[in-house]
Image (cartoon, rainbow, N blue to C red; front, side, top):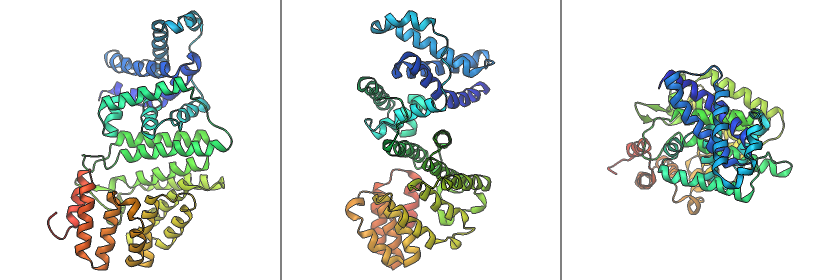
Amino acid sequence: MTASDAVLGAVVREETGRIVAALTRAFGRFDIAEEAVAAAIEEALRDWRRGGVPPRPGAWLMTAARHNALDAVRRDARLRDRLALLEREPVPAVAGPDERLALIFGCCHPALSPEAQLALMLRAVVGMTTAQIARAMREPTATVGQRISRAKRKIATSGIPLRVPVGADRAARLDLVLTAISVMYDAAHLRDGADAATDRDVAEDALWLAAVVAYESAAAEAYGLHALLLFHRARDAARTAGGELVPLPAQERRLWDDPLIRRARDVLEQAARLRDPGRWQLHAAIAACHADATEAAATDWPQILVLYDMLLTFDRSPIVRLNRVVALAEVAGAQAALRETEALADELREDRLWHAVRAVLLRRTGDVAAADASDRAALALADNEAERRLLRSRLAGPA
């Protein structure tokens, strides 16, 4: 990576969403704006390597994107009658916080599939190329490109507004945005077919997006997600060793990033002051309990179980209930946790995590044969190579 590439990466992260929002406002077409900015980023990559970084890189990117948008209008016979007016207009003012937040909400509209929401947000707000998104999502570039194109067409033809919703609709839509960012962070870890290494660029982009949404929306749940991802990020250096996954209880806690943990606690306290509880804040509070423990044996499992019980009032998804089982095993024993796990069989039988948790509990009860069978079932469902090696290491016999 050249020095200009590093500068461009920072400028793209900070400016892409603002410029797309500003050009959408000026031209009235999200698809034209997004494609114009994507082309400008490609031009910057080429031109800045050759001629160096311009004095005002953000303004350079805006000007280049506006020229691209005008070229798109010239090519579109339906829009040519507006060309003279658009050419006379000054360069649009860079979008403010509300407009960038509106763009994020537009990309995560419920009319779009979750996969399309994530891909469109990565492209329009973060400025990732289609190839980069495809690598992050472990899908063919053509598939991701078609998904993004369909999503942009749907925004145009369905009149999906790029605005922050108000009233009762805001909380539900915000949760969609936060879920997409959480999925984005998860996509940087345990990638299909990959090893244990984290895609640090994707993880950092997710963390940055969480901060943008938190501080531009000032919503308690947005702060909650930001705190949660900070807690996770703080443990990142300890989650792998020599290419192998290290389970949380076995992690070397001296490798945890204490300044990042302190920042996560501050953000979580900022959320709590708003007195608007929700699932992301509770997830973050559970992560904080783990961060408080100087060693695995000092983990406050009763408190974590209480937090999971509170979380169930907001989210009764099978995965949340499965995660609660882990805390229950530490508080009430493996047999009690195993009964809860078996109750989730119909919903999670095709999920590798259910089989892996069940194997741990069966092994604790002394049923090694059944535990091995469950680990083998998890192994058959796992795609990440480091995770597969971890599961193999737990088997009493050959897989």
